[in-house]
Length: 95
Length: 331
Image 1 (cartoon, rainbow over the protein chains, first blue to last red):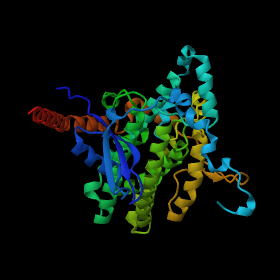
Image 2: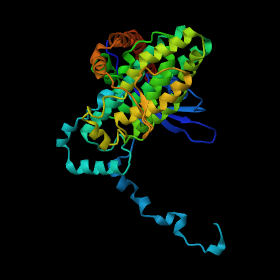
Image 3: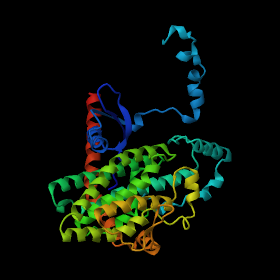
Image 4: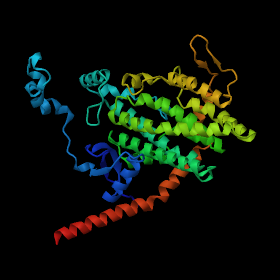
């Protein structure tokens, strides 16, 4: 009997208290329980994590790299959002 | 490593590509930009990488077999725990690599089927048998040592997911090599019989390990494209030489003799010059005629077939729960 392709999950791990969950890779699993257990076995064999998130890959919406120019243009053109845009006299010291 | 059979980039496909896009792509590679899954890439780049990464993954998976052979017969609990952890790591490495290959648009199931059907290659080294416990030492020391030599430059490969998988693999591989060397050290300081066993293992594995780096530069015609695309950063012979130079002093420390009586150090370059490699043996093993090719494939097929009920049960259970949740939500 042909088994359906096993769903793909993205794995996020928080390595220490105070840090955000970070994407570490992906895996295949039939359901959430198996996905969490597989994530533990594949990505945390040496104490890499305190917490794991697994997210179905199909649930992720990604921006299109081909359109990154247009997508990120609003940030590119606003250099006045950076502290170095402003002149502060040297005598004032570190600010 | 494990990529020796794949020096054939399908350069012939490139004619159909949009020349301007290919040029932009090459400019990104030249600027050391990383290529990510959703980026445009030439079809031949995709094909070459899919093959290279999946063959690398298959090698990790098949590589569990020669070592798995000794788990139940490890000489102490310490050695057994370490070997078990190492074999589990190899499985993990296979999975990181399959995941990287899948980002190129092929499914896990297709990749596994290609291997089971004998259509995909894996590293020639795993078609040699592990006859004694000393072979486990030599595999860790030399096979993993050679793999590290090849994988470190792959951490800077132009394809992002492959490079990232390699970084994880390299971090873990260092334990493998050290545990292997420790086994060799213990044996070579042990009884006469133990020392002889260590020497015998080195004698049998030395040449196959040198073959892991792939055909000599003079004979591999397709390195150019992989180099141009920054998939490959060093040639086969460069990596092989680096490996030999690193290994000779380690063997000397163990008091073991490398089975190449004519090997000598070049006084000017400092390199250890080794004798000619028997490339016919390499070709035979790649063609499926090594000592264990049939065994390895049979073992993988059996594992896949024996595990079928687990995959089916997990899928059926997930389906049942989805159905129940949908029914509850409808109430």
